[in-house]
Length: 294
Image 1 (tube, rainbow, N blue to C red):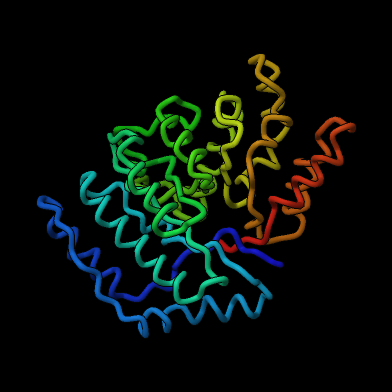
Image 2 (image 1 turned 90 degrees about the horizontal axis):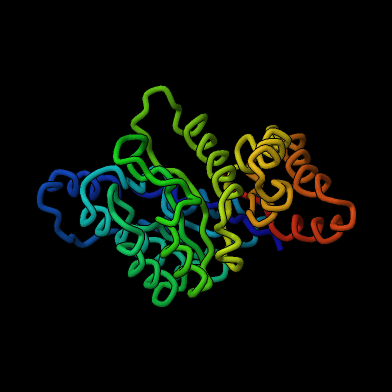
């Protein structure tokens, strides 16, 4: 079976953007609005996704809202909650229309200055009511502005990690939009955060504290394969556990777009390990580096 673990609803109909526009006009007084898109309209918007799956012999896609459209940096916590609920409910409808082909992954109602404890109700709803298997986690909630988001290794995130372990739900560390004019959204912003997320998690005690936590870093970890030995050296200098061992607690997807880069990721993830752990490492890589979309 070929599984794409990194699918977004990038073909969402324009009604979704129109809804968002109306919501932001009332950003000073957030209120819950109904989302009106017919099943027929949703089905038509999903056609390119289903056609791409057939063309690439993909059996299942873990399907989530548009990452750049999560919009955590606009409005307050209530604005983010209502927008998150709309997007997650939309994904749940699509999954219900294509059960066994699409599997739900949701976004969190993150908002600058809020604590992860404020996101847990929606995370629980995702797992218990919507039957989602994962969530997107934005490591840069304010889009590069203040208040800055704490490092993924900070205890700030611990309530989220704890609830994810309790629910058995995985997370993909995926940045959303940015206000930094020096960064291209897809070309530099996303990839920079992929690299930063891996570095911060590997240097932390997160996986020691939460050994059952399942976190995926997309796009092959950004520049991690190319800077592998830089991080090994930093861990030695800072007297941290070996980078090549700690990084094995992190899952990577294969959205790298060429064989050379993918082979380097696999080679670094496996062959940089002590020889007596080679077999175990190979099995883990084969298990986690599944086909990915964006």
